[in-house]
Image (cartoon, rainbow, N blue to C red; front, side, top):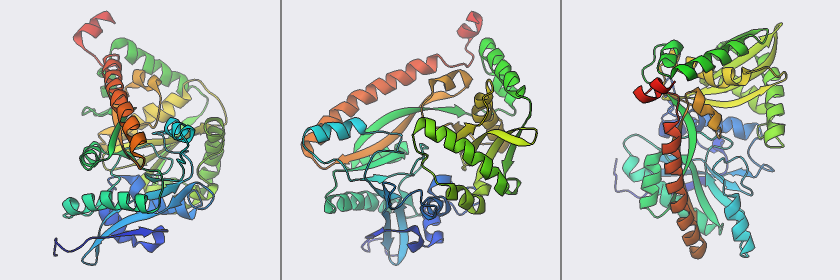
Length: 393
């Protein structure tokens, strides 16, 4: 292949215009486990085909692809946004400040996985073409942002390597935080518990016992173990949680039907059932290096059941699968006592207005320092043993 040949950048209004094999080759999703389940062709297509993104949602697909010598060498899930909902690295205050100054913040462009606060590559690069494809995609994204006259470009939940590479190419780097569980070579949940201080170990055992006493059974299902009727129950859970947190759930009912057909091998569905009826559930996605907790809901409230289904069952599943970590989604300092430690998350931003861009850059510098201090302090309050803290317990 002629590596000096010109690279062509294309905008694609629908994922069906892009061959699945080409997209997944760039996403490293052709093996038994995708590197990132959320950037697979099948996941993004499920969002599109179900109407979860597209007309009327504020997420308009504009998938970016890079081509050289007749081969697709890179891709990015680019969307036109008319709001800032469903992003989890939020810029509401930026939008408000820009509007007060007389600017029009929306529409904007976003490279992201909709409704998914999970870290992973956002610039998908075919193996062997990384050095050419990454700068081409970044420059291509900036070019189409400028050509369309939108206010800004955002790349959310990218990897740290992408964040630093993007910063070197002139984008603004932002740091936020989540709470992740790290597998320190544990062979069992008891092995994990043994790494905690006595007090935290006792508290987790108590919470698990209270959860297990809800009056039913807890099952972890994946692949063909998941049946279509399970989604009827989970849809009720998802609607309840969505209505309380966001007002309107982001995903449509059709998404779960499509997911059953194309994504069930990428998922672990954890159900709490009483008298044969699911009363609570949590949905996880499986990547090559992590288990991603995504949705939880219930139709009955039971003490500690949320902790059990969302955190402890996920830890057990990750240990069984030999996965290095669990990402349990956005927010939640309450996760700290349950073994989930603060972890930096990264994003990139480009703002067309130079004055506004300078102001945001100053804010991001201060925010990054504060987040770094916060992570250091919170980590010190983690539940894991140290000689001094074990003596205090």
